[in-house]
Length: 241
Ligand SMILES: [Zn+2]
Image 1 (cartoon, rainbow, N blue to C red):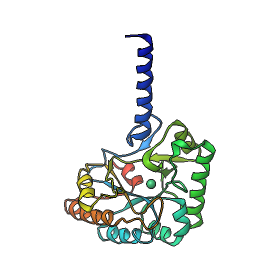
Image 2 (image 1 turned 90 degrees about the vertical axis):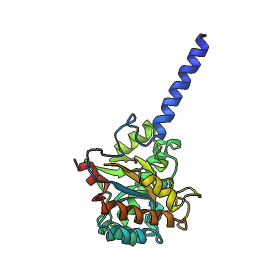
Image 3 (image 1 turned 135 degrees about the vertical axis):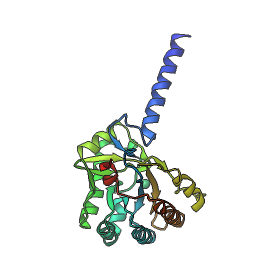
Image 4 (image 1 turned 45 degrees about the horizontal axis):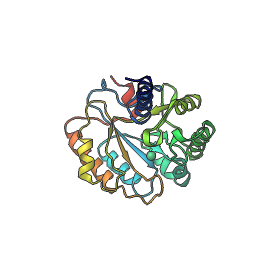
């Protein structure tokens, strides 16, 4: 093999490595990322991104309460700014809340200054509502939009006192073709200590339709609580086992 070709392949390999670790939610290469706790026993975390949403979040709160389940909500700052009362309700019901940026950018494409601003503005909106982010090991929960992160993203998170929090099971519920059944098909794969990703809002508009996610949640809770499974927040899942 020619030297040039070897070099080209090596470069391709390095690019593939970087791509993998920027995209895959369970990758730990760029720093500690919370994504599951296999030692947690019969416990699963439900996580919801892109709220608080005036239409869907209250429906989820009602369902979660009915099954004595807790969830973790990753709030977009601009929506927290619009829905401070709802955010307070989420927190008062015992659910965990994390930072999901202010405007939902792809963090890997932003400068470190822009990342700091996204994190700080979201925190300001949440704290203006009288709510504090939930923490693990003294660091606030933060979920990068799309789960995408790179070394600079992780450095800014650490500097600002956050811990990256992704998931181990995605339900693909933001896709147009998602249905209650398609979401359940993914959610039912959850094993001990898994963290499930769903959405209670939309990054672009509060009018996003999350009916299928809400109903899939209800069915999953019916099935699993009957089998003795519990649904803790992310901090409680990480502390378990
Ligand atoms: Zn999101």
